[in-house]
Image 1 (cartoon, rainbow, N blue to C red):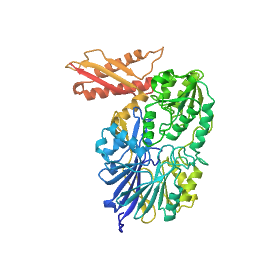
Image 2 (cartoon, rainbow, N blue to C red):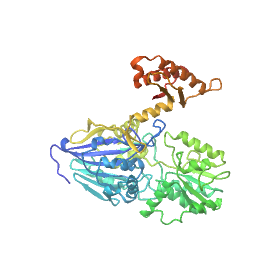
Image 3 (cartoon, one colour):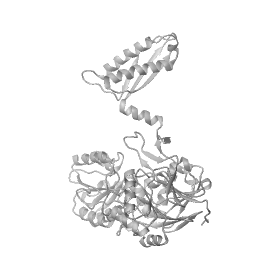
Image 4 (tube, rainbow, N blue to C red):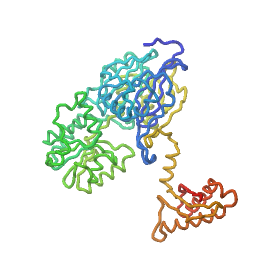
Length: 558
């Protein structure tokens, strides 16, 4: 490990995951301000919603780190909000990747999909191993979460040790993997933890998250008593949940068929590291089509109502081999991610219309538990680690502030609640935000990375709210109208009393009057003509619909 000198600083810099749940990108810097060495922890995505039409994936903006001395990128686990942006961002922050075997398997797929696999150095680190990266000695710490091989990180530096928890909870019966390595964390606390950078997702929830072992029992009880076809929707990344469902199915005399690309991908990753190897082979699609109803269980993606996922196609009746109807059952063994309430509700309504009985954690408590720590677990972690500085992360602003208050209640001497882009000095001296660097979000739009405030998305959002008018006509050499004026509307309403076609005919007359009113040089400048037509139609649209649509004017010169 590098020896310290009097100008060295240890800093923490979140560029994603602070003031939001997801899109995690955290950096640690060591050295004097003019010559810092960096490591990055996680490079994740978040997902678009109704406010970002046409954008499914959003990634953190790594501009500040481009060109910096990055020694390595360390991945804590394989959830999309921790590894999903690697294919997009690695070319901009090039450094070796470090991951445990299950995570490394899934990263390889991402790099291949992005066409950069041959360019990237991916080092597979055994569970519990230590990676030396200049002034950073990074040890993988076994924890429990809702995915295989979750890890915290003990980051030792000449100025102190940081415990970066990653996503975690305390699960004493995790089904897959080992229990949290409490002895290691307590020993860290005995040696002295300078700072703990910690998950804040469930800080408002009292008690504990619950165990996967409890879910295993509840699912087995529920599935055992069902007749007809059974589908279970869960997050494919939760190998423990998949294991519980598969074993419950086998105990009930059912064979399992996988529905959804992610299910196949994750089971392949799990089997590559020795998980799910003592179960019966999955049914093929051809077998699933003809298998007896009381002897099959479908393990499906799409529990959040995603339009193209397996459960949505089941609800529409368009899935190629999963057919559910009257007398069949669908178990949702997952939480409702905030923002997905409407899509999940629509999905379940469609299933109910088909006569499918639905089971959720609301009416069957215990068939799902969270993967993040509730308040009692947070208190326990602080008691084990006993950090000098609490740095809440992985949460909205209200989560981080509440987590900071909880840390103060736990007698943590210092607390800092940074936003994305806030550079936090952890040592030497008191913890403080010492700088604010460029940060933000980049949208994956049409296969390209674009700025959050890009013109294309602004126009798309404007069109979605206000509609589009397209105007076309021809002018002769003297600037006289030489054709019919064609006005077409997209996303604009009409009714029985005044059909849209009649409204557009009126619009064409207004355009004609506007163009005829232009004189001299104005008729030679197409930009002037387009601006005049746009003003006329937007004013008319405001009067008719109380909207200001996008206006596209096409002028043909004869």
